[in-house]
Image (cartoon, rainbow, N blue to C red):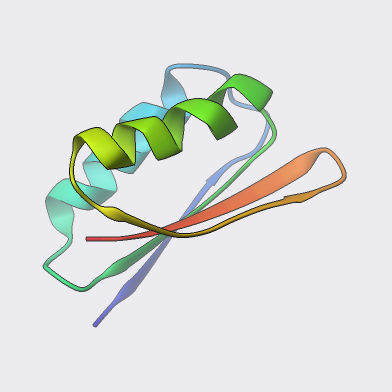
Length: 73
């Protein structure tokens, strides 16, 4: 199982979502994808996209202006 980290701090939609989808295409079943960002709308959209893509949201944390979402393929 691999862990893929994506840093999209300072990026706005749709960049965080596009990067998440790219990482999922490269990953295999069971891999973790960690996305760190600052754009509030992306924090809402990424879990919705994960549900639509039938991948599991492992965690969704906010720390000040930054958030971190971990999903598992």
